[in-house]
Length: 549
Image (cartoon, rainbow, N blue to C red):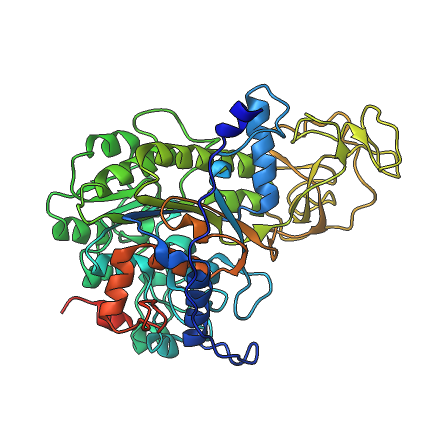
């Protein structure tokens, strides 16, 4: 027993707290950007984050990675190893520090990825759809230009650290965009998406803001993901797909502009090119016209897409060349997309893929100088239900009992005599009523209907392979796309400053965990006169104060 206990990861001792006073406000009307920033700073400092001495920071963001998604993925990974599954742990579940994150937006109980990631990257909660700007209206360009928020990647760039972005979504999608862009509407990914009024008022699209972010220092040293079409013009044919062209109407080839401003840097669009570019001082990788492929579909060839693990390791390798340290955001984006599709197989498979990437990052870094955090931006409506016996296939039908009073048997049955699965969704395209795309009964991937007919009872699943990758779990409410959930998500941490990650915190506190635990970040904030007498960054920073002179 003593030997077994000695191998468990030790939890760091709770760090000494620093008190920051926060004025009481009326909610939600009193929640100004400055109040959000100060309140997040107070919670992090009160948890002892100021005692951190991190040189590097890696934030892993599992988009839509609800606690149910984590639990089900944990079991699936364990079962793939030939074990019952419940005893398994994903890589980050070995981390010594954990907390819960409250994910609501300023205007919505159930949030979206833009507003939530803005909270994580800037320390300020904002509206649904906001990218790097304080709360306002989704299409109000003029107001948004007056209230940009500084992200911790921009802060790190200004402080001389190398910065990196890795995602399996488009680089211009909500989560990665919130690390470098400032727009009130997440949909403004390229100039063709930008309304004429917004353009006239001075707003610019997200793709070109990736290049413009160099005003804080050098811009991202590493940017790897999908979304080639957002960076190239309608006159440019995609290098991988003959039937696709770029979407830009302004004639700007942003890939060419990036190459021109990064002498010696490498632009890559497939796996072999990424591996060959290991010595390049800067990396831009656009591996798909749109989002990158699900891991289930990803081909294992040199010309195919790299895995999330390969992207993560390439980023760490390049960023580690900077003597001052680095910050890196890695997004497992397609967990969210699979959940929206109502397809648990792909959602869990993508979660396992991110676990592999986290494990690789742990092995490639040291817990002595690198703070690693794993979290999600929001949850989904995936449920793990029924009373299946221990080790029952997590994607299968419930074998066990249908209520606490039953005697364990073979397949559990509902009150109409039908079998049912362990995993279900509260809403989404898996509803078994007839749709304009698929007949009544079980649905299969990909299914995005525009209409449903009322269902009559439940279908007979006894002969249906619910473990098949394309099976869509049943949903109660018929929707074209399954919705997000509003409950808390997890935060897991290891490394310098990780002991501050505990309790239930507002999501914007994650930003403050990072900046307070990283001396070079908080020193840069103090140099801009945003710190109190204890050296805690408490005043909302102005981005213009961090731009190159």
